[in-house]
Image 1: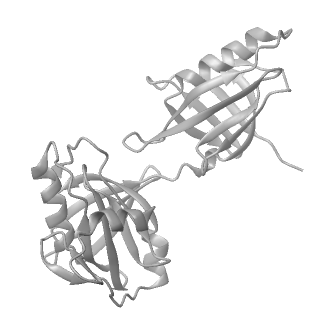
Image 2 (image 1 turned 90 degrees about the horizontal axis):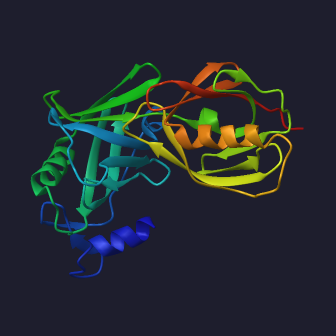
Length: 268
């Protein structure tokens, strides 16, 4: 997919060259170096919150994804796809090279241009954490914030679960088995009698935001169908999740009300 993005973003002038975000020609080959600490700190996807201290207000989600395996950067500036290379030689220091972008007409072109200019001015970074959410500030040579981003690791949802309560009422129906697959963005399992399948949506703008969508179920007549119905309604109303303790999580509605509690199953 990244190669396709690169192909789409490059206007071929001659072999090995393409249009730079600023309009200049640049050679595609660049020597990149980085430390393992930087890779551990920055690897993965980050959602843009502010650009030059102004809230990001774009039609599409603006984000950056750092891939240190091949020293590449890709993402979206709020309208157009971004591709580039990472230049990081020491902890706290980072730059981006060969930044290119698609050329779609944007609803708010000023914001997208500001993102591209800010990326070109980045020379350092710092990491902070608050309530389990990691924040990344990309700064210029004077230490001024250029882009502020956040990343939340929701992998604790991964795995197999049983349901211990629904709407604060204990569930002793021990046939329930739900499997959440973050990588595939899917949920499937047994609601106690009927098989269910659905998709996940992880909302990057909400802290610990998650939704279960496109839920479908088989339609066998079951003796405890009211429990299955309550479970499906709880899943459909879920907007957030949180850890309760070792091997337990809660699903919450839009107001933070607890809809269900899940306990991790130990797979044999």
